[in-house]
Amino acid sequence: MRSTFTSLIHKPAYEGHAKHLREVFADPLFDRPTGLDDSARCDLTYRRLKHINDGLGLTAPLLEDRERLFTLVEWAALADPSLFYGVFLHYCTTMGAIQDFGRGRDDLDDLIGSMVNMDTIGSLMMTEAGRGNSNANIRTQAVYDAERQEFVLRTPDPAAVKFPPGVSSPFPRTAVVSARLMVDGHDRGLFFFVVPIRDADGRPCDGVRIAPQRPTAILPLDCALVSFEDVRVPFRHWLRDGATLTPEGEFTDPAGDALTRTRRLLSVIRHAWEAAVVGLSAVSRASAAVAVRHAHHRRTSGRHAADVPVITYRNQQRPLFGALAAAYVTGFVAATVAAPEKPVASARTIRTTSLLKVTVDRLAERVTIRARQAAGALGFFADNRYLDYQGLAHSFNTAAADNQMMLLDGALTLAAGVEYEPPAHAAPTRAERDRFTPEVWTALAATRERLLHQELTTALRTATEAGRSTLDMWNENNALAEALSEAHAFSLVLDTVRTALDSVADPAAKAALTDLCALYATEEIAAHDGWYLAHGLLDADEVRSLPQRVNELCERIAPHALELAEGLDVPHEVVGAPIAEADYVHALTAHTAVAHPDLQA
Image 1 (cartoon, rainbow, N blue to C red):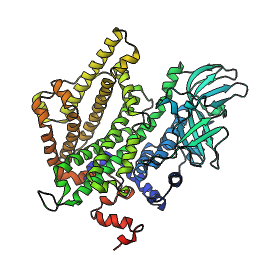
Image 2: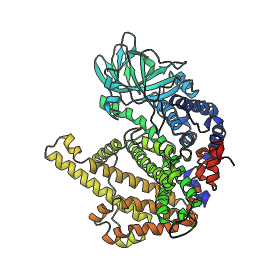
Image 3: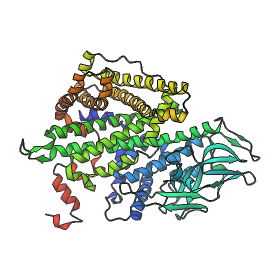
Image 4: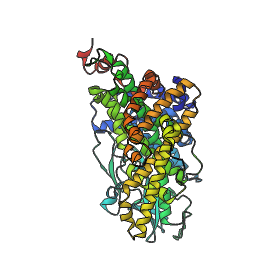
C-alpha cells in the first residue's frame, strides 16, 4: 500500500529530481551547525543557497520548471527553514515578479541571467514598517525624472521603510521593490522596480540604507529595515506590465486606474503562497512521519500496562493520527498547488491559492505542535526538528501576507460574488450522517458555507440599508467573514481529498486512507459542533458521540499507521531527526557524541 500512498503525494518525476538533490544536500555544508552566532548562521544560509544553485546548473528561471522548483522548495524546508525562505524569495517571488511584470521584454535578460547564475541574490520588498502587513498602502515613491528618463526612488518618511527584507548579510543583492509611481505629481499606482541593494562585494549601493535587525530565536533570518535616499533607477528597471510612459511624461496603463494597478501588483504573491503550501506541507509530513515512527518505538510502563509502545494509548493515537491525517491533507493540497500553472491567474485562482495557504499553514502548526508534544521532553531537542518546523509554520501566520487579512479579503470577494456562487448541496439526512461517507463530509461543509454566506450577505445588506459606514459594516461582521472564508477553504480541501480518494484503486489502501481522512473531517466538524447543532445539521446524540467516533477511527487506523507514515514519502536523511530511528537512544547519543565524548560507549 505504501506505493499507493506515496503516489498521491509525489508525481513520478519527483524521484528523478530528488535523486539529484540527494547528491547536492549530501555536502557537509548541510551538517547541522552548533555554536554559530547570528551573523555566521545567516552567512551559512546563503552559502547553502549558492551551493544549491551551482548544483542545479540552471540555464533558465526555475519557475519555468515547476516540478523541479517545488521539489527544491520541499527539500529546503526540511533541511533548513531559513534556507527555505532564501529559496522561495529568490526563485519564486523576486524572479517571479520580473517574469510576470516584465513579460515579453528582452531588455531584462541580463537581470534575469544574473539571478539564474546567482551572481546576485533576489529579495522582494513590499511591506513597510509603518503600514502593518499591508501590501497595498505603500508610501515608497518612484518619481519620474523626465529630463534624465529614469526614476528617483525615495522613502518619504520613517514609516515607509521597507520591512522586513532579509538583506543584512553582506552578499550581492538585488531587490524587486514596490513603489508608488509619481509622474508630474500624479499617483499612477503601485509598480515594481528592480533595484540593486548590495554590490558585487556585498556593500550597500549608493542611497540604500540598511539597518540590520536581530534575528528571531525561532527562525534566524538577516532581516533589516531598508530605506532609499534618491536612488537612481534606470528606465528599463521599471517592470511596467504593459504600461507606457513617454519622455514627455504621458502615461497610459492597460489596468485602467491606480487602484486596479495596485490590485494587479498583489497577484505576484501567489508564487509565495504556492511555495508556502509546498514547504509547509513538507514539514507537516516530516513531523507526522517522525512522530508516528517514534511513538511505535518509544516504550512506556504505565499504570495499566507494562512495557508497551506509547502508540497503544488512545491519548497518543488521537493527536498523532489526527496529525497524520492533516499531514496527508496538506500533501494532497500541495500536489494540486504545484501542478502546472494556468495561463491566466483569475480572481478565483488567486483567492483559492491564498485560502489554501492559510489552511495549510494552520494545519502545519497543528501537526508540528502535536508531534512535539507527543514526544515529551525529546520534542524540545533541536536535533529532532519539531521546533524548527513549528517556527516555520508560525512565521507564515504573517509571512507572504497576514492570514487573517487574507481570510477577510477572501470573504469580501465571496460576499460580492466575484467568480463565486455558494454551494447548492442539500443537507445530509440523519441516516446519511450515520454512514459518514466523503459525500456526507462534503455536504455538511457545503451547507455550512452556504448558510454562512447567506448570513454575511444579509448582515451587510442590512447595514447598508441602515446607512452604516463601510468600516462599521465590516468591523461588526469580521468574525462572520472569517468563518465564511474558513468554511469555503474547508470545502475546497474536501474536494481535493475526495479527488485523491477517488484515484485509489487498491481497496485496502482506499479503506485506510478513507478512515484517515474521515478523522480529519471529524476533527474539523467537531471544532464547530455547536454551530452544526444550532442549525439542525447535527443532533445532540451525534455531538455527544463525536469523541467515540474518533476512537473508532483510531482503532481502524492503528494497524496501518506505520505504513501510512512511510507513505508520506519523507526523505529522513534530510530531516535527520534521531528519534525517527528504531534505536532512537543510540541515535541520540551517537549524534551528540562528538560534542559530548563522555556519551560514547
